[in-house]
Structure formats: C-alpha cells, structure tokens
Length: 336
Image (cartoon, rainbow, N blue to C red):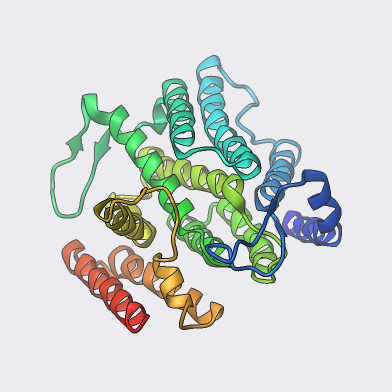
C-alpha cells in the first residue's frame, strides 16, 4: 500500500503540473458572481474528475497487484450487487458533473437522484437500511415495509446536506477527511479509507489555493462513497454499532440544512436558492478562512469524539452540540 500511495503522490503531482490543460479539456468552470461566489477569478471544477482518475488507479491496484477484487470468481448475485453500487456512485457523479456544466433545476436533480437510488437498492439489497440499533433503546427497530422509503430518505438527506455544506474553500475536503478517518479507525484500518484520505489531502491543498473546486460532481461522488461505506460498516461488518455514530458525524451539515430550509420556507423564499446565511458564511464574514475551517472541524469532531470514543450518552452529546451551534449562530450573526 505504501508503494501505491507514493505512486499516487507522483500521479497527483503530475496532475497539478498539467492542471490548466486538464481544465481546458474538461471545460467546466465556476465564475465569481459577487454574491454567493466570492472567489476573485474563474476556477476550474476539477475535483470530481481528479477523484475518478485516482479511483481508476486504485481499481487497477486492487485487480492486478492484490488479486482480491470482487469481480474475480463472481457469481451472478454478487455481480448484481457490484453493478448496483457502481450505478449509484457513477450515476451521481455524472448527474453532478452535468449539473456543473448545465445547471439542472432542483426538481430534475431530485428526480434523477430518486431513480438512481431505486435502481441501486433493487440490485443490491445490502444498500437497504432494514433495521436501526440505537444506544437509548435496547431493542432493534425493524423497518420492514418502510426500509426502502427510509433508505431513499437517508441518501437524499446525506447527499443534499453535504452539497449545502460545500460553501468555502477547504470545508468539504476537511469533512470528507474526517469521515474517512473515522471509517478507517472503526474498520480496523481498512486501506480503502486510507487511500481516500491520502488523495483528499492533495485536493485540499489545491482547493485552499483556489486552484480547483469539487463542484456537484465531486460532492455527489464522495457523498455516495461515504453513504455506501456507512451502510457497509453498519449492515455487513457491524463496525458501526449504533446509528447515532453516523448521525453525529453528519449533524453539523444536516442541522444547517434543516435550519436554512425552515427559514427560507418560513420567509416565503425558494428553499433551493442559495444565500449567505449558512453557518460557514456567517463565521467567515468575521474570521479568516483558516479559523473558520478550524471552528467547523471542532463543531464536527466534538459530538463524534464524545459519543463514539468517550461513550458519553446520546442526549448529553446532542445538547452539547445544540449549545455549540446556537452559540456560533448568535456570536457570528450579531452586528451584521
């Protein structure tokens, strides 16, 4: 694995050197609008494309160097499962990439998202969330006929909350690095998660320097990878014991999504049209980009560490997060 990571380092270094040529070839850019997009120059949306390149070489590494890729000696049922996952992940990637290029309406994005999720879970039953284990209720809650609806709901909320969360440089990258680090620890150091952490550090560097953005293609791709990873560790490996472990990791993006949706609807605005009322915007209005990202990382890590590693009870951790979140809103929204 170390040799492969060194190879990835040089591969991504080469990509950095050829970044402008790659940008011209893909020809998808994010232009400043002095409203939501405050970067000073047109920036290529290459995050998703670089992810795909890295994943392609990881696939080659798995097949030819480790000989443990699942497509070897597959039966028809296993093949269906893998096809379901690939349709979900790459379907969302191309949906996001198309949106980056042509700006799809929220309704169309939701429609195609639903189609992709339904196809995926019909081919791969492992992707369905069929039961819930919680720390505050001793019995397992079986979802039965509601499992499909609940699974679709979870996928939609996760992907959209992380898309909402992508607002300032470094923010989404740091979230995904935290998420994959969490998965790496609980899985007993699964090298797939280490691979994700490694190449995300490269993208973080470029993103902080304003050289590229993730775009919807990159966010959708990583969001589905994270979703599938959570479900795999929960349904198959049983490394995630309680659903609250996932809940607390996603609490900040999800809470901001719920808050903003409620406020926009209450004020008679379109819930899907962006503004600068996100928590990260409020903080960044008064603090530097570095300090803003540090505050956000602290807000994400605190409930995760308290619940998953220090075994503090659900209600206490949730109240602590609410206190942190409200304190940040009141502190940084004042005197606007």
